[in-house]
Length: 453
Ligand code: GLN
View 1 (tube, rainbow, N blue to C red):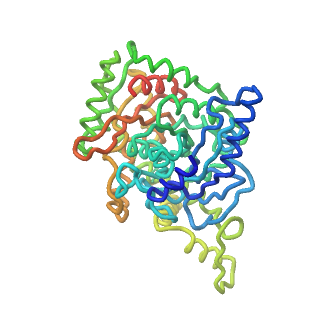
View 2: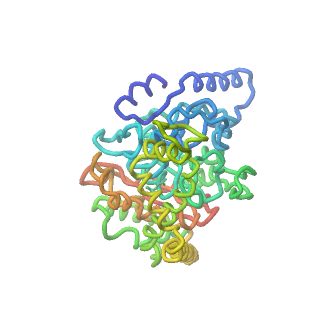
View 3: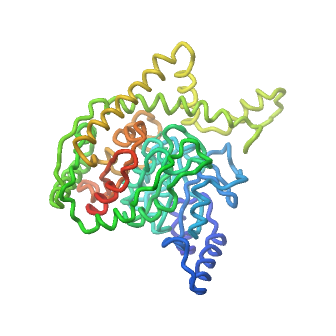
């Protein structure tokens, strides 16, 4: 397994850091407990996992894909990391990502691009391209991603893997280096729905260290996935979000989506058309709310507390900060800090941030109305299959359009996942079916995904 990672990762570059010895000793501990006849902590004990480099690890560096945190060793484990360890899941290493989780292709990493195992000339999606590529290249059977606007689901779609963005507050954000705190959510990734459900149960649940963590029982997603596997969806209503499958979607994405709808029908689900009129404003609202939170969250990288410090003859603290941030942040991160600072400036607050928050409420209402008519909603996960490296890297707007279908869920704080939906006929690359459910509606979502899979 470890040799496979070394071999395969040379072409793919899914990992920023591999810690074979820690993974091997964790696996050995599980072996010992099995030999001693004691039950392992979880059915996934001993199964190696690839961890997105945005979650802190006390025994490995955490860079968040940025030069500003190069070589930083966090003094503590994220709650997600701690839960993985407690379940006996060996952490094989940390995976590549767009800097501070801003991007849709992993090309904005300060440590080089990750390549899509389906075609090494193409991107694996982003920002969690490293985690998705590690799964698709069979370097690891389990991975963790984070999803602020689609960074778990879009890479899953583009690599033919499964990825879940849990309900906001379902998985602790303690130790998750913040991009946009009101949108960020860590979630499980794997190659099958059942594996994803097993991992979901390990990482979800209340955490007093995160004030936004939900204090409610974790939905029984493993049972739901097992039930779904019987392939019977009679009595379930599946809402088709037409706003998320028309213009701007690649023909093969549309045709695989239509085929998925036929399959859901064949499994007994009733298809209903739902209307979500405000989803068309989601992208615009997101790209005001996210940069606003980014401009505030990233103020902590001040050359004093963590990572990089550039002095270069500076004569004041301000100059050290400016030099450090100039050298440490990449262009996309700077662009968003500037956008957010502008949107939050006193004269513009109502026109931009205030307005975007109102749109956010309207999107939540669209979801609430749609979930009156349907148990889950479906759409394609991403408008296209994996695009060639370099295609969109200089065109931020083209890059942002990748997130059209995934962003509404983050704005509403609800849950959604991507499950492989076959290959697009024109390029033979994977597509994803997005299944969306209400807050804490993970069980029905997993059930539909497992039936469809
Ligand atoms: N691609 C989106 C962005 O650039 C989503 C990022 C994410 O989910 N972390 O903001």
